[in-house]
Every structure is written in structure tokens, then in C-alpha cells.
Length: 207
Length: 207
Image (cartoon, rainbow over the protein chains, first blue to last red):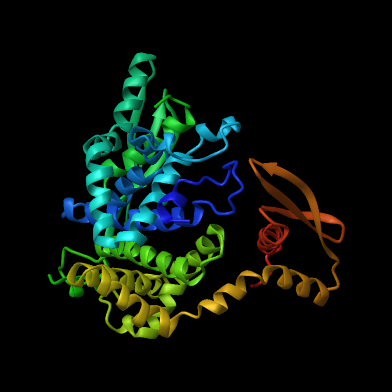
């Protein structure tokens, strides 16, 4: 079966086809990861590794890719068992998009795959600036939630220590005087974000 | 600083250098992941995705890469703080190897990086067949441990159910009649391996 056709075959497809898109998804996922890594490396020449890693994981995570795939119309093309209601709520379209990237790679090579990913996937469908700003909003989120619900939230530096040659900070968050979470990072902002993200999780605050 | 030089700069290096190899490591890790994925995809045209994923994770994991880097002699070239004894026991040489791959990619492009990885890293230093066979040995490991120590270990099928259109198996392992672990997979062998791996962990059996 041609790769492009195979890329759209979910393993649940009802026809008597043996093959499915999972191997292509494995390949496409890796190619996408590499191309997004290079893109971020060059776009943010001064950001540290942790920043690039976090941003990449936001771009390539299942929810993002599935959303992109739906907006590209891939859900109309993927062959899957439509009687299995759970499937259309899972990430099979994003997975098919990865498989499609694998097919493009096998058919056209690395340079063309990069072009495909940048021009057909990232540029039209992924708002990287918005993803960046989401990153810095955990602190704001918990503060505005606290204000709305008449809670007192504080961010406190619990520890500053050296890890090798770098300083490592631990920030704790209290809610009405009780500590709810703490986070560690190479600067206070990063540590505060980690702590805030944990607190949002622990307190089950809608994000 | 030229990329190749930067690739060998661990963040602990004692000189007054601001920059280190972490961004290059981020990039190189992604390039390596893509190239190994393609290599396995083509080398094993009939193996399912799970097999490729597992094998890739064995190849690119920190222990493997660090070992390769040491055999390549990278530990003699990486600049790091040698007074920090913990560092030489961590994976900084494998990380530097990834950074070096990032540097090769930026300098020479994808095709040359692939050549570098296949000819200079994988072929001389990584025994993929051995890695494959390790995979199937968890069951043997626990069985031979049991025999040596006069224990009775059994593998039992606890459940067979459909997940979408595929069958999913759960295998449980008992030690002298007590269940110690269970594992799930798309065939009994896979499920047994998962269960055996967990049991080895739980029972703290040396591997």
C-alpha cells in the first residue's frame, strides 16, 4: 500500500486490511520532533534548553496535533471504525498527522518534510507566541483565582542553593497560610511557575 | 564560539565561559532520535511500532550513549569541573555526544549527520542485536533467579479482552503463590515481558 494511503489507516479500520499507520506514526513523530527542535533552536537563539524543551513539548503534544489535524480536515480522511465512539474522542487524527509526516519523509526526504511541517502545519495552525505566553501564566492564573475566591496566596523563596556551578531556587506557595506546593528551577520565575502549575493541579483549578 | 567547541562545554566548566552545550544537546538529541527511528523503521520492515519504540529507547537512553561516548574518548575532551566528583559518574559524556551530533547537524546538515551517526556511533559502538535479545530475557531472568533460589514462579493469563479491534492480554506473575506483578500487552509474550520486568524491579533482582 502506498505510504500516503497507509498513513490514514487507523488500526481499527473495518476493512480487511492487515496494515495500519502505527509504524509511520513512529517515524513521523521522530521527524516532527527533530524539525520542531531545529526550528525552536534557531528561532530562540538565546533561550536555555529548558525553555526549548518545554515549548517543543507543547507543540508536539497529542492535544495540539489532534487539534491541528482536525482543522486540516484529516478527520474526514482517516479510515477508522466509526462504530467505536471512543476513537473520535481520542487522538487518532493527530497520530495520523504524524504518520502523514512519516510518509512525506519517506517519499520526499528530510528537506521537503521540513518544508511541509513549517509551511503546512506550524505556520498556519500553531500559534507559538500564544504557547509561550501560556507558559508564563500559571502564576497569574492562581493569583486571579485566589482574588476571585477571597483566598490569600503567597509565593515564598524557600531555598537557594548551588547545584554544581548554578544556583537552584525553590519557591513555595501557600494558600491561606498553608503550604500547597513547591517548585524548583534555575531562576525564581521558573521555580514559581513550576510551583504554580503544581498548585493548580493540586487544587484542581480549571485551566 | 564554534559549535564543535561549544558541544564539549559542560555547564560546570571552571573557565569564565557563559555558554554551554545544553542547547546543542537538545538539538542533537532530536536529530539522533529521528535518525535512529528511520534506521529501525527500515531495518525492521515488519516489526510493530511498539517494538521499534522500545528498541529505540534502548539505543538512545542515557546509559547507552554515555558508554558510547566514553569508548569514543569524549570524556577526555569534554570541559567540566573535575573537582565535582559526581559529574564524572553522571551522563555528561553521553550528553556531550548528543551536543556533538547537534553541532554536526548545524555544520553539515541532515544527510551528513545521518552518515556520522550510522558510521561513527551506531555501527562501531552499538550492538543492536544484543539489545534486541535483552528485550526477550526478562522472563528467563526471573525464571533462572527463581530456580537458583528455590522459589516457585508462575506466569498466568489473568485477562483477555478486546480493545477496539485488538485483543489485549494481562499476564500475572506469582512468587510462591503470591502475585507480585502483572503486565498488559497485545500478545501474551509482550504482556509476560512487561510483567517480568516489573517483577524484577519489585523484587530488586539484579539485572
